[in-house]
Each structure stands twice: as structure tokens, then as C-alpha cells.
Amino acid sequence: PEENAGSCPSDCDLIPTRCGDNNCDPEENGGNCPEDCSLTFCNSDGICDPFESAEFCSDCTTLCNNNGFCDPNEMVQTCDSDCGNLPSVVVIAFLDENLNGISDLGIEYAVPNVIVYLDLDFDGEYDSLVEPIYTTRGDPAQVEIQVRPGTYQIGVISASLGSLAIGWVEDIGQETFVFNTNERVIVAEIAIPLSVNLPPVAQDFDIEVTRSMLQQNPLIIFVHDIINSNT
Image 1 (cartoon, rainbow, N blue to C red):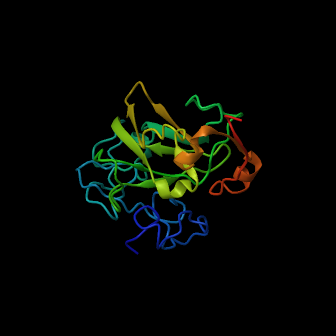
Image 2: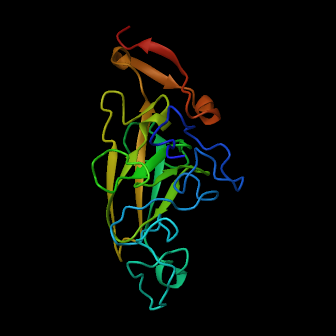
Image 3: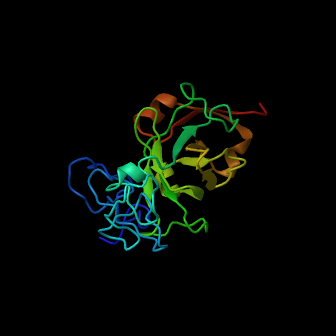
């Protein structure tokens, strides 16, 4: 029960396949399947974050004073009048076909089932039960994470990428992404470029990825027509 897909991928399913059946299965938690599970995370910082709840975290209370301001201990779930307009960040992971690092929605494929986490201590490592995790879903595949105003860092659970890597094969790129929210930045956006993760020996070749196969199973990448660029 204390393990999940982020902290122990060897024991737990990376993708909660039964999410939405109204049962909180062992591989599910409040981050990757809030539909079935309570918000069980708690960073004990004295402020009730949207991923915390009074049931599992002393940072939160079910009280609501309806003063139009989201007080430190008020919860989004029980005080929508004060906390319903908190800012958020939209995270999307996409197959960067033109290698420009920019998400061209409608042209470049948004990859589902990529697991990301809020790196609350900015150490680049996922801390189970303290840092919430989320999964990209939908069409286009993305996830919206509600937060209190401030500076945050998003990390990627690399095991959920399968045969993909962040960035291009010759420049894997950063694995964490910082964003800021405040009264002016209500919705931030993070676009994570992904590419086929090939061994160094293949870096001198031209590579073509079968997108149709990626759409059928984003964790399995088929590479074909590998042609030596020097021939």
C-alpha cells in the first residue's frame, strides 16, 4: 500500500488501468487517479495545497469563512467560494518531430500516460507520499494541476516514458521544469519535448518514427528505415 507507480515501478503498474472504477487500487493514488482515491499527500508546510485534504493532512481544515480569499488552511474541496479560482499549470508531453522544442498542437502528437510530479523541494527526485503525481490523459493528452500562487517545479517519472526520452538523442535535455503562478499568471503551461531514446551508436543515422504505432501504444516505439547519413 505504501508503494505506487512513481516510487516503485518494479512492483506497481505505471499506468492505473482501472482508474475510474470507484475503487482505489494499489497502483492508484490521489495524484494519478483522483477519481478513485482520496488526496493522500501531505508536505506538512502549514498550508493546505490543492493536492492535500483534511482527512490525511493537518495542513488542511474543512472550515470555510467565505471571505473571498483562500486562507492557508482552507481546502479547494470544501471551500470553493474562496479557493475555487486558484491558479494552475497545464502539462503536455509531445513528440517533437521537428526538434524545435515547441509544441505544435494538431501537428505533433501529444503523448498520453506520461507521469509527472510536483517537485516541491526542487531536488529533482520524486518523494513518495509527499509529492503528488499526475498522468497525461485526454485528447490532446495533458494534465491540469491546480496550485497556490508561487514557484514550482515539475519533474518527470522517467519509467513512464518507455522508449522515449526528454529532448533529442544528442541533447537529452532537462528533466525538471520550473513555472510561476500569481494573480496575473492564472494558467501556466509546460510543454515537455520527447524523442526516441536511441543508443549513442545510432546518433549518426537518419531516423523515421512510425507515428501510427506510437498512437496505438505510446510506450512502444517502432523505428524503421534507418539509413546511414554518410551513404
